[in-house]
Length: 154
Image 1 (cartoon, rainbow, N blue to C red):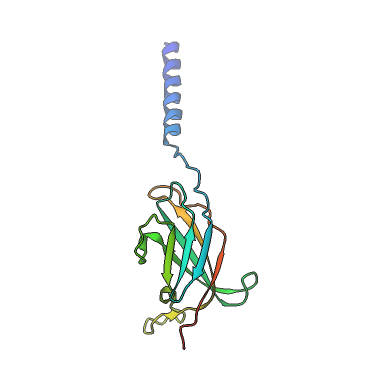
Image 2 (cartoon, rainbow, N blue to C red):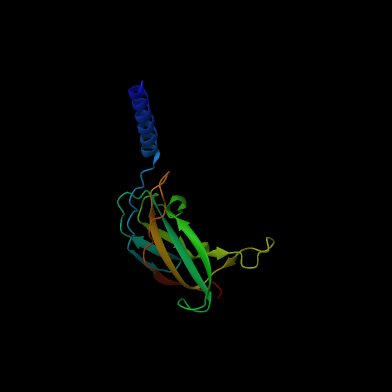
């Protein structure tokens, strides 16, 4: 009788510990940070980076300096562009993105009656690789790439 109770207790503990071990999600190693370069032409800025093995798409975060300095007290507008909603003709997994200067818009005054403002000036960007769905997207960003958005006013 004591032997049966002991065996039942051991089996119960084993089942509980085993189910906890099975339920623990396996966390994959983060994707490495891409190496980003950028450049501007007459109507757009071109972002290019190395392919990251395991990446399905990429996210490019841009900051436009509105006032101040990059390394000091600055006021920035932050925008995000992804390869999953690209308009430059490429596919989601391509490791480049061409963004028109006219796409750098933001509603600075918060008034829904006025159109968003066309942004210009000093800007910087960084990119990270993504591999959804159901996986952590806490992957590291590349280093900053600096460029200038020209003033659209004549």
